[in-house]
Image (cartoon, rainbow over all chains, first blue to last red; front, side, top):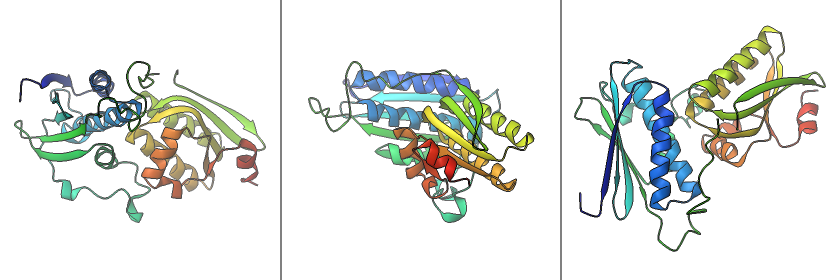
Length: 161
Length: 114
């Protein structure tokens, strides 16, 4: 990681509250990095889905396990890592939620949303033995917020309820 | 926006006004509880007014699908009203627009149950 990069790491409990906490933390970083409202929404949603995945599927909601969240802010993108302490999984085994037979499924859309909302997305074996989701979003071009929704102050996504 | 769900009767249809975020935890649980209570009261024509719901995650989407199927399995019908842009776009992205009947006008929605 170069001198121009910033790194932030947090260890979260395997509990529902961690999902909101992770989302809020990443939103603050994304806003400070200059992402506009639309991209902040996409980043926030992707972090939610990554942590939900770790909470539910990776750690199987077992409270003794942890969720490891890390952010890297490089000169050109924001990279998010979500690592669980589960058994890992193969992306190829994840059903397509858009397939006719899966449309009425009550779960299984998280990976799809992360892929749709982020510029890069992959799942690799993590150092804990669990799965590590790595996803990134390119930083908006400075002085060109028009392609990225509102930016700067006043563009914070709503944080109600 | 505070999380809430209240319901009222209109032309034989139960209109549920929901507000807040429908996400993993409280939001999804409230939707599940509300629909379950309505089904226990034999109310099977349900219109979910999502005008004040500006955020849904994959758990919330799952809960909407679960509610839709639960009502359908009881011979009823669950439809959606007044989607915010984010919710609209999310349903479009997940192809659930092809599953749910969605309305932007309450009277039109109520007439569709006749």
